[in-house]
Each structure stands twice: as structure tokens, then as C-alpha cells.
Amino acid sequence: MGAELGDSVVLAPPLEVDAIMKKVSKGELITLKEICERLARKHGTQYCCTLTTGIFVTTAANAAEETKGDTPYWRTLKNDGELNKKYPGGVESQKRLLEAEGHIIAKRGKRLFVEDFEKKLARA
Image (tube, rainbow, N blue to C red; front, top):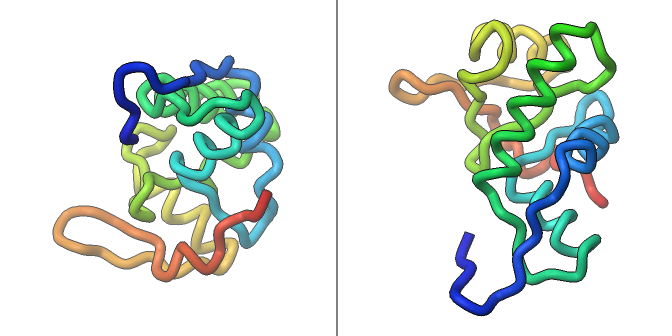
């Protein structure tokens, strides 16, 4: 996300990523970008590693599904509002869960997006 040699970058622990995802209330959304911004602020760094954070988002989603946990992973989107095919049940399952919460899903080509997702981002 723009980090250059010498910039400070946090590799946040998976539990911190999961904790942020758990705080997203019904009707709200969050993206990888917002998660990374929160983690960078928390750790006093310029950036957060989006690669590891993205892996931890997917890990949290799968763990929540396997354990019937309380992480509402379906509310976490890709940076452009796209649904995540790596979540349990793929984009169709995420679409169903988001629509049940009142979100409008649009198809663009073969990909699915939440309409006006920016207006529904959870504030930290």
C-alpha cells in the first residue's frame, strides 16, 4: 500500500485483525485498507503489511465458520468493495449474508461488489 524502503510497517498478529473484524456491527462494513490503517495507528507505524493482514482476514473467516465463532467476517470486503471468493461458501454465501443485513450487491462482469460500500464503512 505504498510503503518504501525505510518506512515503518507493522506485521500485526492475527488476533488483532480478528478483534477489529469483530467490532464491525450489523449494517456496517470494513475493508482491508481500513483494517490496515487502524493497525498502523495502533502500532505507531506508517503502514501495515496488506499481504499478511489479508491472509489473517481469510484465516479469521475460516476459523469463525469452523468453530461457529462470533467474527462477522462477511462484513469485511476487499478494498474496492468486492466480495471475497476465499471466504467460506465463496461469494454466494457472503452475498446472501450481506443482503440479509440490507446491503445491495451488484455484479460487474464476473465479480460482485457492495453498492455504495464507502457510505457504510465502520468508523474507528
